[in-house]
Length: 203
Image (tube, rainbow, N blue to C red):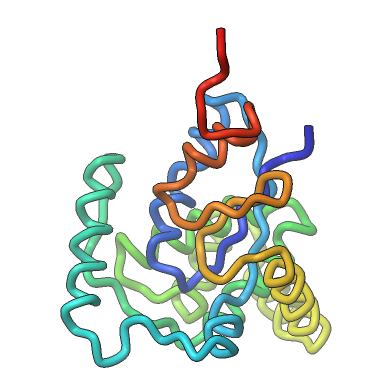
C-alpha cells in the first residue's frame, strides 16, 4: 500500500505535537508516512482565514491545549513560543529540499524542538543553522539552495498540489483521497488506512 501523506507546514503550532511523535508512532503501528511540507499561510490567505488575529481568548486556549497535549505525549514545551513565524516559507522550502535529499524529517523535528522547547523561531537564525547542524548538514549550502527562485516555485507547486487534494490546514493526513485534519485525527487516519473505515476490522 502507498504511504499515508502527512501534509504539514512549519509554522503550524499543532504540528509540533505530530512531528515530535510521528517517527516512533509509525514504527509502533507498522505504517509508513510520506512527509509533505507546504505553505499553509498561502492557503489561509486565499481563504481569508486568520484564526487568531484579534482573538486573544482563542489564542490563549490554543497554547493551553497544546501544552496539555504535549504533557500527554511527555514532550517538553515552553509556551508561548514565538508566533507567528516571520520566515514560514523559508522554513518549509528547507524542509522540502530536505525531503528530496533525505534529511527533511529530522530537520523538521529539530526545528520544531528548537522553536517549541528553546523559544527560537523556525525559519530564522539561530534556529536555522542550529537545526541543520544538529542533523549533520551544512547550513550555508542548504540555506543558499533553499532561498532560490526554484525552491520558492517548488514550495508553491507542492502547496497547490496539497490544496487540490483537499488540504486547508496543518497537520493533515491523506489516505486514499480521504483527508483527516489535526494531530488528534492521526489514529483515525491509520484506522482508515487499514480498514477503509473508522470501524474496527471485524474478526
